[in-house]
Image (tube, rainbow, N blue to C red; front, side, top):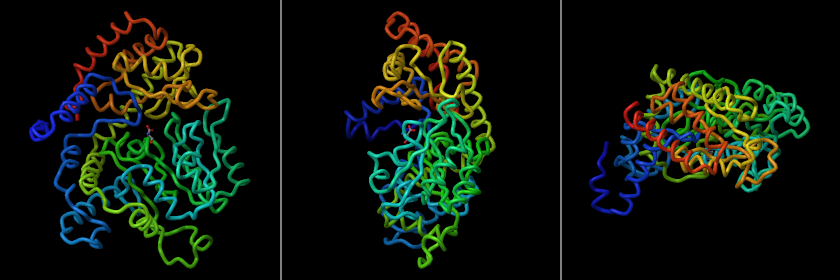
Length: 430
Ligand code: DSN
């Protein structure tokens, strides 16, 4: 691993803080479902001289000279993304999931057009139409949620809303939904009402890549994702899409561009200038890693670990939203523990177990002090932990959440966390 020699000589202050963060990650149990541990190779690619280069445009169509090697690297990333997700077209330039979503909307919508997306407080994302986000400000946003009884998405309810509201795009995908998403169902509903079908698979991209979750690229016009969650790459976003615009005759008969071209121009010059080619190289490395056979085993273990963790939490009397999980993620409802999700997550952080507080569906509490805690297994699975460790960790979480003011117990749990993290280094099991 890089010893950061030059960094330490240049800036001791920042160097020391980075060392502390390395230690925090090593000595903590990271259960935030959107975080993971990128490989050495990904980290190395992200810290190369590619950061020095301007390359606005796309491979072989740039606004700067000197891009002959950058072109090859970006084209490799594009080809691997297409292969990995079985997509017709890939744009690997979005800086993040939010920029990927912004460009996707810009490609097919005009300001004021209607978006149907999942309610943020039911597990959607800010960019799926939240009022405080650009999506809620620029577009007319309608939300669907989960069913109150099952706490799961009900496709009949979505069909009814879609038929009544006639959105121009239906966005599926979530950030806090522990169950499989019926992407076929979403695509069918979109087709029935002449809406674009878009899926944001940021959380489940790794699972989709190896078909442990339905992969929406076959029947959705546009699929966006971040690259750093279950996919375990560098922090960034990509857009996958069909080449042709399935609704061209209805919405843009006079526009000669294909959907792929609309997406590329929405990313650059639409919302971004120069791409981050060092991160694009790191994405290329990540896609190559995800194309290896052991990535399938990794994704299977993520799910098995989440299910073992969910079972342990439930057997300790904790209530999980929807009763369990099909993916990498679990949402704990803290209401019957008589604590808030924030109190629970803060107490867990005191013993070096990192989670995030989160709204649960139909939550009556505010977002900054909600009822839920969101946890997930991608990062611990990367470290090599399996079901037996999930049982230990589930019991530790329950011990803390049931008694958040017990300082003696916190000290005991802190020691047990240290014992576990000492056995599983963040950078030896990749
Ligand atoms: N912040 C991401 C997450 O944690 O799910 C979504 O953008």
